[in-house]
Structure formats: structure tokens, C-alpha cells
Length: 177
Image (tube, helix red, strand yellow):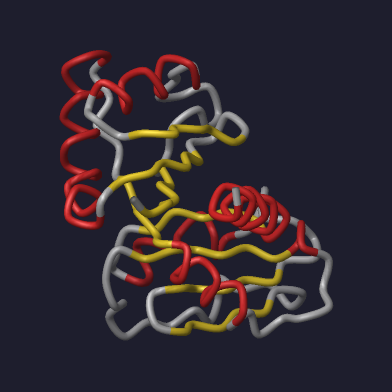
């Protein structure tokens, strides 16, 4: 059994697609996943599974959520190594983790032009399927964040650096125990 991180796109955001974390854990456990643990209310789930079963997680859990409560979110699953690599590759070392945002992409993005949507204070870097954004003024009013998926041509789910570091710490504690 390996430990994985599932990032649910767009649940419990702005009062939309609401599901209590206890209910989400129960649905995931009913699908046969073990050691299910959630972190904050925005759809961060740690779970244990055999690697072959983990590949089924997005489709299986999305279908169960659709049946149970009408939600069918996109789900991104990362292995511990993938999470560690994304954090290690961070091109904005030394910045406040809450101003750094990691966007995990569903596929390699198409060619894109961010001129006109990126503010002077924002900086970004694309590395593989991770889009790193340093936004010291926050992302609440960011034109780039509001249009990121459309501009890149792929689905994305974002987490700030503080959340990812906490999740990495939780995964390490699970794998060491």
C-alpha cells in the first residue's frame, strides 16, 4: 500500500459544490480506499491504496460522488514522489508560502500568451504539468487566475504553498509510522 494525495477541483469553494469532509471520507472509504484523511475543507484527501487501484480513484470516486450527491469534480491524484518533486522544483524559493500557488494541470498546456492578464507583481513559471504562480498581492482579484484554465487550454487545480507543505508533512508522518 502506498500513500497518495487527491486534489479535488472546485469543491467547497465560494459556497458552491459543498460536501462535508466526513461525508467525503465515508464515500471514499466505501469505494475501498484506506486510511482516508482530509485536510481543510477544500478537497485535499490523503489515502492509501495499491498503485493499480489508485489509478482508478478519479473515475471511481467522481462516479460515487455523482450518485451520492450530484457532484462530479475533477480529481488529480499525486503520489508522494510527485508531490515532493513539485515542491522541490519550486522556482520561487524563499517567498512566503501563502503567496506561492501551485496549479496542477490535467495535461500539457497548449501555447499560451499571458500578456495583458498578468499583473506587475505576479511571476509565473511552468514546469511540466505544474504552473507555479508567485502572487504577493493575493489571487482574489488576479486576472490571470480567473482565466488560467482558458489561457492554458487545460483543467487545473491550485493550492497555495502553505497547504502543500502541510500536506507533504502529513504524508511523511503517515509513511514513517
